[in-house]
Length: 129
Image: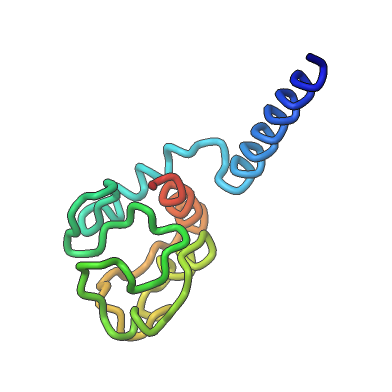
């Protein structure tokens, strides 16, 4: 019984630590990312799992996905050739100045100036599976 209690406590502790690490990276107001995404990205991108593509690719499940790899979307050759894995850092770099990060991308977005907003969007996208 003591062992089962220790395992349960260890499991709870690991969840708390994982949440704390995510909160430190993403900040306490994770709803901000959804709002910034809706205002800045939602016109061209969906985030619904299994949803359709819009002007831009569906971004559900973007974390860990290679650039230019969503089946059924017509990416620029530059995006297919970039060959990066989308993580917080690469998403933030891309949405800072898409044309500078991927010269030749079809994405006509000028960029998101606020580092806090870029982090909020990256955290929002991390939650979209």
